[in-house]
Amino acid sequence: MSSGTIDIEEFENADADEFEERNDTQRIVLFLDEHDDRAWKAATIAERLGLETDAVSAILSRLKERELVRHKRPYWAITDNEERLQSAYRLHQYHETADEQYGEERLEELQTDEMEDVQ
Image 1 (cartoon, rainbow, N blue to C red):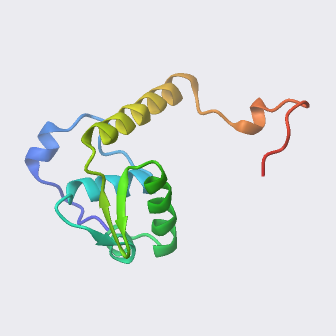
Image 2 (cartoon, rainbow, N blue to C red):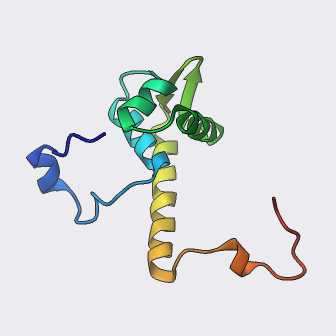
């Protein structure tokens, strides 16, 4: 639920591809990081980002497993471990670059007859 505008300073300082669509996980992490002085309920995050509450809850749970968010029921906040957050961001950037360079991997294309189906 973007207002359709950004601050001109943000516009001027942004990389050329910075405003491309982000996936829901990226949007949640960025939201929490930009509002790192507060803890949020999943429903409030969902409302602010225009997402389904169940989807936000599932994403937050996965982020917690990766230690990128903190949780004290019913609130969520970005990790206070800056190094971990930066490391995750760098890894994400590597994957994005590899996808751009080599194309996205599709598990079904990589499977052989000797591999088990993973459900």
